[in-house]
Length: 252
Length: 250
Image (cartoon, rainbow over the protein chains, first blue to last red):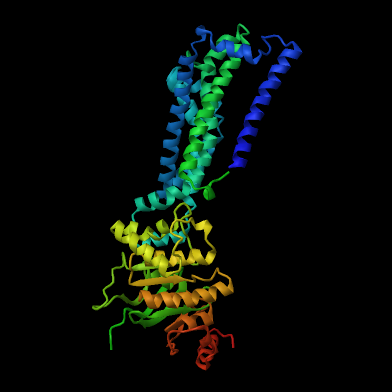
């Protein structure tokens, strides 16, 4: 208990230290605001209604969470399909590994051609970049089952669904979560890149708008808000992992 | 003479054109503990999987169950392996319940039974622990309870104590004899331990490798209940020598 409290305190101190260093650097270095605003100036930008922060946060948040949930559902479903059919796996898996090598950012201009711009193409961007780690780690986790455990279930004439629900899925959860954590970080990057490439709403779009006027405080605030959306997503994933996976089985 | 529970006559299994088992012919009476002993590659695990209904045999006759002891291949088999294979995200009691869940047995009854079996294998008080909190020997005890939870007529054990240290193994041998007496199951026990086979078995079936075939099948006429003292019994030595001879180690 005591050590847990100490760890939290240290984590908080580290964040505060960065904030303080930032403040001192700007203040003592007399850094102009358009190069680097102070923490205070950044916070002031949040009070400025012309940036429509909440609308933009909602748009970017929808893209990230939407694309991510889609990636999670598709990744787990495809991985499951592969464990049920060796032929499907042999056919699709090498293809998926090749597709994974495509820099997803390079698909951005194409996605805009195909889906115009807005929330949908940016969600697709987030999806396409987050789905691979989730799919690959889930497929690996589902394959990890010991052959004797399979024998045990088969000797009792257990169904494929029972095998999945009682043994494969819970056994794969530590793997799924490790893929989900990587995917969460990538989904944020995907949505923002999408907004950079073509968009009329969202925090990434806003950053491009204010960049031309060297409105650095607003850009800083946008980055902070994007980070917080990412932390929220990551936090949800961590909490779920804590609830669903016993400590002993987690993958770091 | 009563009808045997398991009857094998000339059972054969081929792998890639080579026999993995041949000439397997022996009978097992209800409530017997049969030890299948032999070196690696003699087909003893394969034979166990055939008995479990996991593999088909390629020739010969195999019958499990009799008029007095009917056998349902879908629910009358319990299995124990070399590794405990407990699900690490489940507590011990939930692990023991797995076969009952797969078979869809009534929950409350299965839980009571699982608790009783955990007591039988000496794990009372460990129901709510996770597998990693138990030693290897204790995990294997839980695996034995799991193999008994759906009250199967036949328990198949594939080198269940092979991964344990020598002392724990001797202790588990004694425990198994006690559990077998109390649970009253027919057990087929695969091992490469020659003295383990004689110590546990009411009957020993010897399998050899290269060529894979059944070399011997004899009843072990040593008194029950057995204690470790029995290993100094003259007949114990005769039986182990008999097995060594078949395996060409004399």
